[in-house]
Image 1: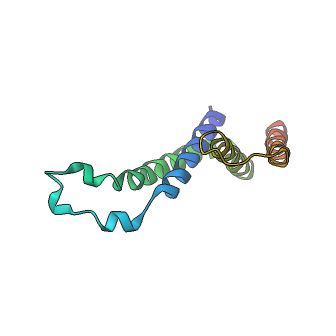
Image 2 (image 1 turned 30 degrees about the horizontal axis):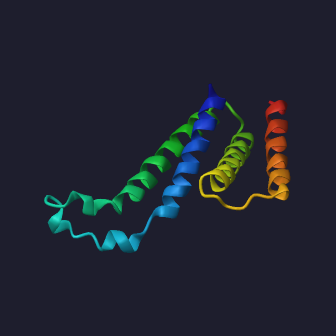
Length: 121
């Protein structure tokens, strides 16, 4: 179960990273709080902030649950590697960022390292 928690923590880390990328403090500062009742759509700049908080908390909770059973170094390396792979996949598939054979090669090395650590458990 702890490995599932680690995967969930990595997914939260990916979501947290994209919410951070979308976060704009300047837009939050321009919210007219006096118009909150009549124009709630004006609060849309808060969505990335809410995601940032929620995904960050979920990330920490699930990572800490996973670390109860998995050695810290292994859990942290796996968590980060899965997050990097997830970010790379979303960048390429959803955001249409360039993806080369070198990206595939180095991402495969990350996956091989995680599998190697998992095998040592």
